Image (cartoon, rainbow, N blue to C red; front, side, top):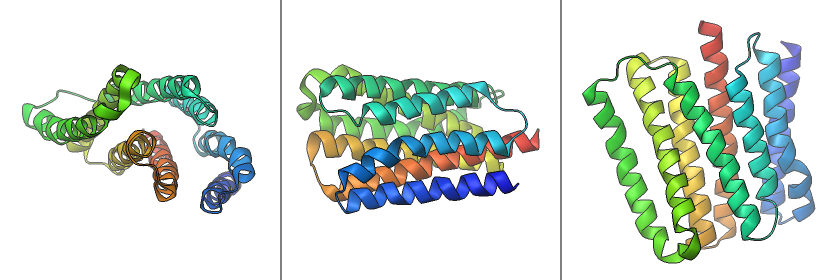
Length: 218
């Protein structure tokens, strides 16, 4: 219990310091704090549950790699970072898919329609500005939409607190990634960078809460 409290405090402290670094435009503070956000989340997960999901830990490792790679300059770092987060989302989908039972048509439609609209709107906004990155961004946007769809189906099926946290995390993650893409390809603004990190940290924490609650209920 004490270990989880300490890990949680450290996670939020480092997250706050990183966001402060963005607000203050302090690149050194951002550089030294960003890798520790996911590392502390891994520690928090490890000390909070007795049986750990290897797939979730792998998802966090890929998230960590994505964070580190996106700190680099140049298109190659962006693409490899995108692939790392793509792997993390695929693992989130795998985790949720393993919990789903028979999928009703109504639940499927309720899940697909909003995320389908979101994907079409985002891609129509970004496509004229993507140039050689159209295919990678399309694939990434499709995968994060599938993540949202599966999380929605699970929530509609189970309606548990754990499913609600995963559903919320998927939505906030989609917002974070959308704002990041808009900030990179459509309209660059310091405020958008702050929104990206706040929503990213919140999304990762919501997914963590889902994993902990789901393990406790088993």
